[in-house]
Image (tube, rainbow over all chains, first blue to last red; front, side):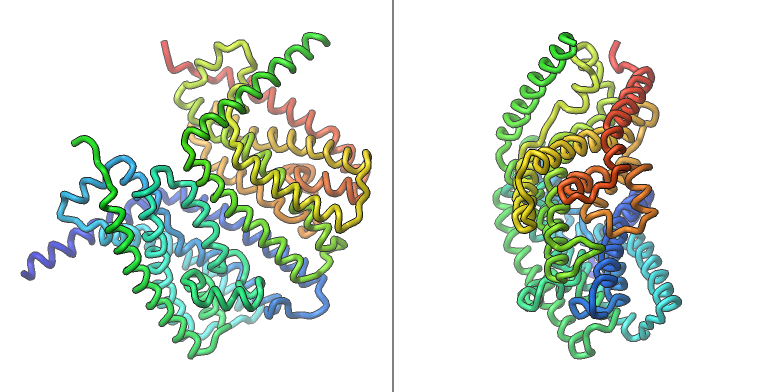
Length: 274
Length: 270
């Protein structure tokens, strides 16, 4: 019994290791993608600077200039932290018939993907968290922005849940591969819209109270906007707890939805050849 | 002169055939068309979010009102249709074509190789979505700014739009031509490609050093800033002269580099 459970864990530890190695293999590619991720931060920093310079008050959309710049930097990094990419691999697995091997092997596709995703995320997250630490040190050194230790801990916890939630959101979307063969462009469209809705480009407050009220009910803001607000102290302690509950509730909901979608999709799967 | 005109006519006719073939290929996989539409719609939504930010703040940024900024963003969206719909797909495919020796077949055709290799495919979905959205945004801004529709304003805008298209073709092709020398230029391509988004907002939001670099050294700002600047009467004479000389300069540079690069090309067959 104990041995069989150990074997079950070992399989997915291997998948985690494979994901980890893949991330290290393409580390230059990742660094380059970080450079291209820096462009929007750069453009938005100049945009906000211009808006605040020409604005009569010191507060725009409820943010001071320093808060807005801090948000811009953190949003760029956190959006990159939780970003997926496995949905294209799933599309390829279903399209090319490689998915068949998971049906006959003693390996669950969901835990395999999850373990591989976290394996890929660890080195990348370590790199981005390193940059985030540098940003926070810079904000503290030059602007006197302080972040209390409990907030950092709460941020790390929300970040792990945000990564898991984003995985599940895209795991649900990736089930579309069973209905649509060439779904890559659609994934890209979904990705960019979810980045916008999660607050990965601008703070959600920019789009008005009604928009924020709707976003509070949807899962997207709990992947980027919420962890940042936990870190920069924009939400009180009870709000942090409420957000954590929403993250957990959406994780549970996405698990259920993905289960249904994958069961239905799996019935449509057709593999040709041996 | 007559020979040149004949060549231009021939290439224009061939280009129309390329577009027709591209449309047919896209229609063959209809869901690709919808997927493409969704992708471009997503990107458009992000560009529109910048418009929302500007309008809701209600701030005049360095002398540019929200309506004037809309004119710039609309031009950027329309120009993205030209770049992403007509050039980008070919530029992405140039590297594998050189690497795999796929230029062999094109070399044998009695048409310019550069023309065939860099303009053969077009994405009509991206082109249409961005062109329509950009034109609507420009028209709204134009109307709200009460700019008269005259030969000078509309003609000037369209003339500089063509200049911008030529600059974007040349500027973004240059790094791709390095594929003749380097096996993997994907990193360079990814970085230069991201440069495109610098045009998301008017160049006036940046400091003057960045503006100087973006106009004269890596002339990315020329692409979407100059057409609205002409219409708004905010074009300094130096920029005007530069805009007229730049397409010729860049096209010459591209042509020279292409010819040099082609000498490095090794055929895959025989």
